[in-house]
Image (cartoon, rainbow, N blue to C red; front, side):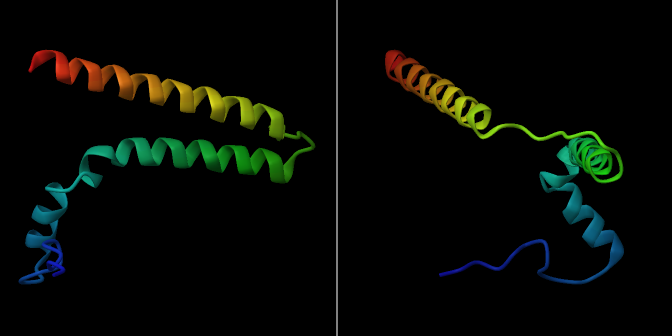
Length: 87
């Protein structure tokens, strides 16, 4: 059974929508969303309107993806081990 979305259920007043928005995670991360959106806009603008080339090679993305995967795997394993040590 699919539950109704509590943000859109009930009355539609501005005060209630603002109260429901304050209860979401978007209220906590909106500064980061604006910051990274501004950086993406700057990078796209530089790429579009100047002669600079801001591309990253495929090999670099592969290496970064592999390193990130290993770090996440290590952190998950160590957290799992710490969880079972306490019990």
